[in-house]
Length: 527
Image (cartoon, rainbow, N blue to C red; front, side):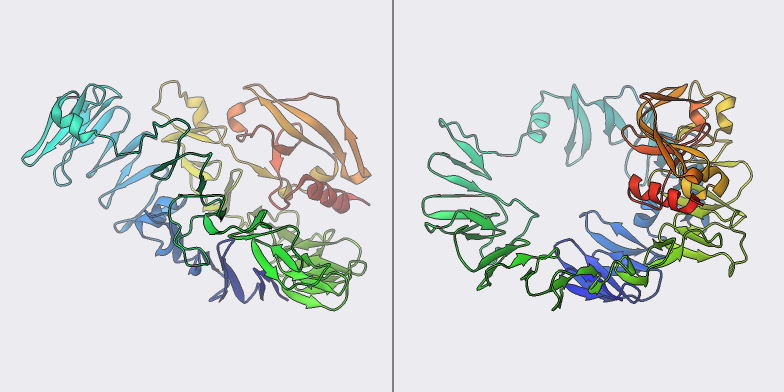
């Protein structure tokens, strides 16, 4: 089965649809663990997709500095591995991070709020920072509010801010000053908006218009003889009253159709734009992605037509419809089968894996092993090998000898006010998908977070769901959930909807909407 990739189709199992929203391209998937990185693909086991200094995506080895910077798990430091949440790698030397503010200074660690690391690369010195306004000047420091570091051919020296050297260094970049009455700035040009307009790019930056005209910067133009569409200028004509991307046209023109910022000409009356931006006539057929079917008024599943009365569509793949059948990614399964487990779009048969249904736990799209630990935050679920003295803080796995955790936030135990009690706290987002049937199908609540304090959480729009009885009841506002220890609870986002019981708060990593979650609970729990 295939799915849409721009105006083309691709096989999701064998191919990848990579690129930006504007430019898509189909690549043959090198393996099941290859993913997109911009317009190319990378091996998730040995590489990462990293944003370089120019903010462009590129594939790099996992041991590269870029990958280590963006990763959240163990990293390589020389010939050793280290945890960047609790340790530093300073010139191939592993150093314990005693504070979240610690950074490397050669092969030593320093506190960026209290100290400065100054001097050339070959001779760095750690200085006690005189004030938050002090910065490095060679191997010394200066007050950035009253002084400057003046660089000369023979080195650097600290001078008063009103010195000629400081004033020369801080001279502003030239910018036109439009002093004439009623003038505005367009790029580097001043203009009168009564006589001219500024032609600017509305969408993503580009270098050339379709006519070949370069448009890297805003340009002034005369609206009486020219028209500007998305940064590109054309000769004005009386019927032109709107734009289709870079092309001007008139709403009264016949046989033209604007789809996805592209103007199509010589079209038949009655044509419309498909969901993928392709012109078609709904009276003559149905278009699924870019595939046209000569049967009008049909429903699409990927590139194919399907019959929703007897089939179910799972991410572009058709399956026979029957009682209790739901989607898990591209596959369909019986939601009441205790031996089938759906983990964020990946379906597992617990019988073949020799797993008992009630014990199987999801960690993201992976089925967690008994010896592993799953740490989860709002946007990440990460599996770690269990270690003595380590606990979860969101999706991070931290050393309790160095850190404490409160509501998903790590803090150094050496910070003032960090007591021994807080060292044992664990805080992670629990998944409603991992609740056993008894806990899921009895009373469970769902509501929107209105306010959070140290002792309680205020929920609004609360529903009490009893899946076994297929009942949903609205509760009075506000609903207050008492919390014994706020630090042991996950970080809750105001305005977000969560599931909860009398003890814990849960989120649903499997579904994108509350309606989907409620539907699954009722279907799974109903007799």
